[in-house]
Amino acid sequence: MKRNLLIFIVVFVSYFLGNSIYTEITRDKTPGKAKRIPCQAKVTTFEKCFLNDDIKIAQSLLESGNIHLSSSVKRSVYSKSKLFDIIKLDDLDKLVYSELNSYIKRKKETKDKLNLSYYVYENDPKDPGKKTEKSKLYGGYILLQVKNKKDRTIYKVQIDFMDKQGKDLKQSLKCCIKSFATYNK
Image (cartoon, rainbow, N blue to C red):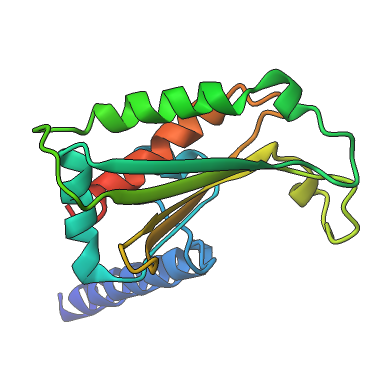
């Protein structure tokens, strides 16, 4: 009886110890990779909050509709740029404003504005700095930054899109905004 109990305890402890080791070994350890919300888990996502005290103020400005938006694109240099022949920045801006408006809870004008900027980077597979084949597969990424009135970065998120024609770019943009709007909530 004691022998069977001892075997059971050894097997039980070995199982949990082995499971813990396996989980730790297979866990993604890339610094900054985010999987906090479902849309972040679909593609590579990095997010970081730099000023925790200011994030709530920025989210409050979003919820009251006080937003200043700027945007730009970064075309591929070594490869022929094609993405921005298909996707127009004005159309992306309209999408971003529409998505931001969905987070407004109560419209209230204030002198302070949420300083939000984003750019769309077109992946350049012929860039000599690209070392691996995997780095040539994605379509590009979106980098969204939120800054305070002193122009210091509060929050930053970078989300990849995979399609070279930008078919999934809108989902990545929406995910950027959701990432900011739901951070620490």
